[in-house]
Image (cartoon, rainbow, N blue to C red; front, top):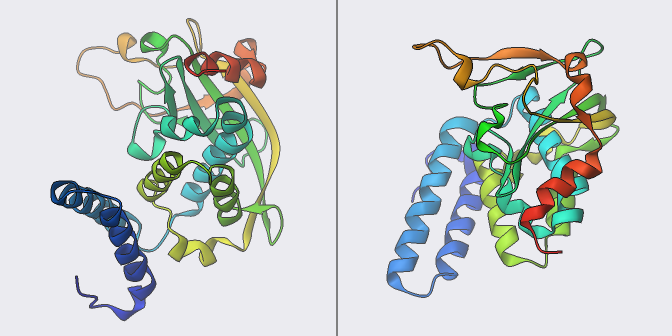
Length: 249
């Protein structure tokens, strides 16, 4: 590999270190080749989409997912919860487990709060034993609150003892477009949780789902008013308990 653009030296150095680490962890020539090509493909996607870092909206969304992972899922489900983080891989829900799925929406809007639903399958409960929507309302504070890099560091500390969990988490971070080389750009902005609400998505929930669409209609996006979901509200602990059914005590 050859660096042609000096201003990307920090990203290039991290890329090289990551590839060496992955290859070193493999035991055979075939495994080394697979590790190299697989991780290089991930980096190519990252560089194509996120060379200049995350947008403000993407930062908030990632912060919300990591907040739920650290404060709700890891304490209850353990480090294995990192394997269920599927949002960065463009799954329909941010977290997917055998026992259910969880979509996290982060908003900075005042009342009435409206969140953007990105497809007709995102809140479709037909394929899940349990499907939940968790909404995190934030205040953004320059120089105050918890920054995105600080939250990433906290999650890393929480899973530091589990090698498989660390690898899964780092892969997902990269897929989400986050890299430590961009961390200085995010440090000045902090987030404070204003409120959180959890909802069980089931029959009657105000959502557009695939089965209700006319033939030829798809790729639907729409706004969902949180106040319209009130009768489907559930306690956050009960939501996590439903997802925990897939995990040993």
